[in-house]
Length: 386
Image 1 (tube, rainbow, N blue to C red):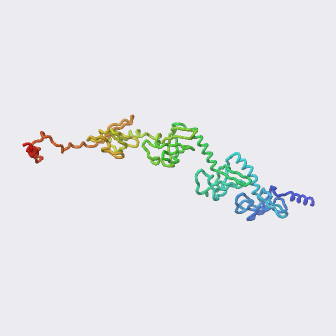
Image 2: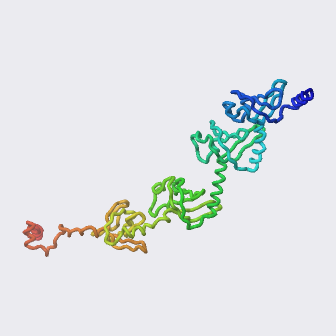
């Protein structure tokens, strides 16, 4: 009996601050748990020492009979204080330092949403700032609680117990890899699907798989385009043809119009000789007027086909932007030429009725019809020479 008591006392004396021991939960209170670690009194495990994260109730994490590994943080004759949080942290740091040094991607679960970001339990408290959650702006993070995310450690300070994580870094890495693969695989002439990302004055940038290519404004449509917004909007799904690829500068030239039937192909079903069509005067030149019949297809009204009366220049009767009706005289789709006429749809003006008749052409009937005789018209003039 005496020997057993001596052995028990020796085991008590062997326990010291900093020791890590295994124990069993004997009682759970609201703010602490009692743990039997083989000491003369049960150790106290405060709620603040349960986890690196905030805990509302001890019962949320521990129950009577649970086995736990704890560290001795305070030891007196009748008082033993324990910490589970420090044991978890000690185990976590070595693993976290390895992940940080190797720039490793690993999966975590969001434990809580706080002002400014997300909180993670890694054995120590990990934090994901709002700016490092996604590549895009997120207004409300409430749906992230309990959500798994792949992350990288971007900042680690063991002394300050600081761990900063980033999900965005993982997304950026994936995007870079996707961009690299796309640049390698793209070939001039490929026709692929894309999404319009943004519009500029000079064209539209289209995402074709992790990398943006430029559709210059001249490649949006076969007809003249003033602004890209006339043809596409951000978010539109479009087909594009690859015109050129420069992997080093990551520049890709694309075309939307090259994936569509040309206007002259479309014109074959819409324009025929003899047709009367409404068109818009696009340009006036000394020898005539170019009239747009359908987007991308213009025909020429030669100056001789503008009016039945002689005109010196087309702008005497026409103006740019004017909508007129023209007749198709001839179409050559191979050469992309259309001959048009305005006067062919108009009647010739009647002969001028007020032209002065010659003296020899006047007759008695003319005199009677007009109410004046030849003598009446020239008599006064003859008197001058008498």
